[in-house]
Image 1 (spheres, rainbow, N blue to C red):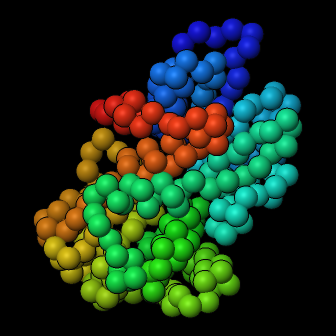
Image 2 (cartoon, rainbow, N blue to C red):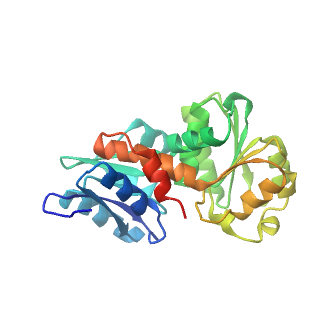
Length: 282
């Protein structure tokens, strides 16, 4: 990659951000198309977020991705939000058009496209269980409701956030049945009632999964289990699901497809998926 006086920047705002696979993936894509843009990691603590967003404008960044823990808070710092960000109440992509910062959310479409690569899901026949209520969980829940999912159950360690997500869904999709269950509730019962399971928490990386989620043995071959944690190793949730013969989706697929959608927003070019996929290989 050649850096010169005309190089534009994009980046990823997060805390932490050192583990992110996005810089490698996005820079490979940018280089493959000969675009004079460089993607950089931007570690930003929560209290620094307003200054960081102002810095994107001041330094004429083309845009940025946004990751944990900023996806919800950043929405109030931008000039405008597109419909995807309004519906989810979260932003994972910022586009800078001549100093105007617009928030988008490509997580939802990234999830749907990644899921389509591993399973053919009739969403009208696939009630869903979502573990978590943060920015990624919001995007997935909205995407599922948009695609006709009739029932969504939310389990989150902080009940207030789960109920905020329920309120958002009910206001946007009155026909959808949305239920909030306590984190301490019997997970096995929820698994038995929902064919599609999405983990949008960090718990999937922990080895003591069965202690944390008593009831995981209720998974079956008819389940589609998605863990949004991306890792070079299979998460403990996916390992347990594999033992039951369930269809699996790891977080790398969603990372790829949400990143491809962000790439197009910044460059107006179709993302080179094969190049990006290869860059994510361990």
